[in-house]
Length: 513
Image (cartoon, rainbow, N blue to C red):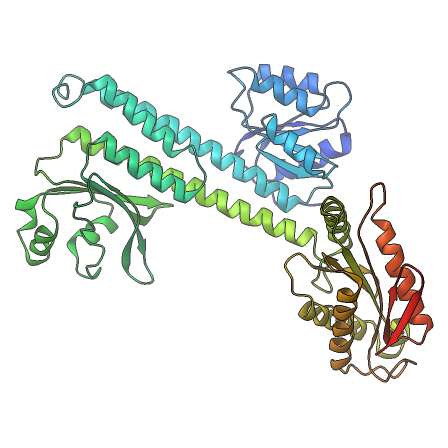
């Protein structure tokens, strides 16, 4: 496999896996993308390697001889020097408990073998970006700390400098505690309002398409506080928004507001002193942070710098949260695709097995009926032989979607069971109810009127359906339900097809539709 080469190394990555082939493949993949890669084949070797050189990221296999990945992670997280190294676990297993344990011991992500190069690269690059953002945060904290120390004497009358430093750092830490944008906004605006003793503060988001500024979070010291300095004003020709788009910090008081017509309107709407800081994400204006004191007083230089630093950290938090949201959406899409049949676009066999197991446990616990319908396209092999496999694929897709139109309850599941067989799981559905749904499915497929000249059941595509339903008992396996539905399906086919059969306690009865 060939990968595009990148000359400049981007980050240091440690690979830990006792399988040489996996080590070699990952190393080639990551080297080709510009990463410096060091690889070791055991947990103990990984500990030694980290002691000699701390990497930016670790890709760590879970199942290894001797010290497994969980123990390696726990040891690294127990020491201050190594506890912040992000660790992505690797495993050939895809069990939920394995994933939960991986995150519980300190992992930041989880990749299942065999690897998809694009997925591995996306997860690695996401963690590297988060590391860079954290380093930026540390750098900003350092600069802010130095600025506070230099101005300790001149700002002593306004606020005790040590208390301000502690409060400011606390605000920054609170902002970065969550990856949820709503939580980030609420935390940021509340903490900023308390820290700077404001009457009002708001985070505004700019929509370039609509050319409007919309409030996404607010802080009010009292319910009577005036707000939204420029939210409802036209964006075009507005000197405030023009400066914000240019990256300028704006300080306004009543004297400054009265200089022109637009500012005069603003002064009448909201008296006091405004400090407005642009929020830039990825070098583009995202919105603004607007702060108000209703008692007019000049903004001190330290307050302006603090607001600027907070806006910078807020912008980083927004970028980080948006990256996280994209990753979450990507993970959700991967999860959806992993349980979807690529041809019919209904659930695949894996999803069917998972759903049957969970619904079986619930029905056994609640002592409720669990129904199942097995559907088989009549003489489908003859259809493929007569019309071709492409037409056969189109036929299966149409049949699956027709079944989907009938089965509408949220807990019900339509799945491709195998080949031309489709299955329907019906929680809390007795035999008669399942038979009613099965007949509706049979009729819906018949209405498609897909020609089938090679069928003995009809001159169009039809279904044979087997139905079973009972209340699961202790020690009874879920496969019993499948077996009963399968026996009923066999009876429906033996009786002439294009019909349904019910598996009863005493006998199997066929119903010709």
